[in-house]
Length: 306
Image (cartoon, rainbow, N blue to C red; front, side):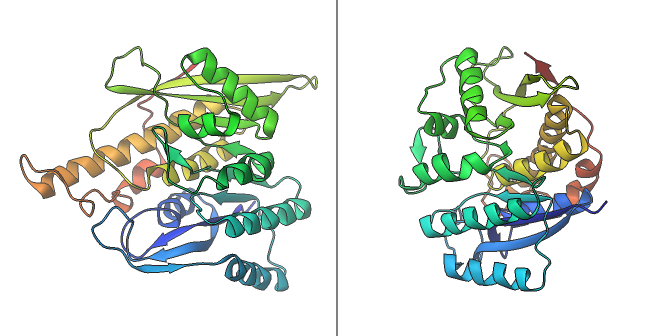
């Protein structure tokens, strides 16, 4: 059975971010991917220079209308990431609602990109749109700690807080929530970061249960761009292959991430030379070179069921 994803994300000519980060891994894992590029930039904005165009809400609607007129607007998954325009985001919401009405089993994977480490990098007026309109439509949500705190209005200081926040997010809509990174201490020390996940499951007898997991992920001392977009795409793929086993889906997702990042940092350090910090261009994800790992990852990070 063919699986089709509509991915509405940024596009860059050079490098890997947004749709460039998500499309290749999804295709390698057997998905048909239809991409709408919310922006088209020369490269990501971490470089010294970048140029390009931004798609407006009206232009997004025109593209969607074209797909609809040809009656090819049937999707199994929708994937969205970074957006900084309110009217664009609201148009995305309208499209998702329409597609969900047409296919009630459609799964919406949402990365609510708003900020990190206590700072927002999208306008503050997007928060209520995400909280009140986007998250209620989401089936799988991948916020970092800061984004989860923004959406729920709760601070996370302990693992118990994180579990409570994930339950609050469930109550807002999504059956699967993964906190992709937190500031909580890892039992393995400060070279690891803690990620947590929670999945609501309906048992055979009709009762609800949740599987909650945590993962200690090795840190890498460099700034990568496009990793969040890759994470959401991989989680989409592996939850599809393991629909009732968040532990397995997260282990494979995080393991692929680990292999890609390791390959990238090794290459970047080689290119930069001894004692020099790699440039943004050298730190572009080694995506194509990681094809084998994406398809069949050796599991290097184990998830613990809480």
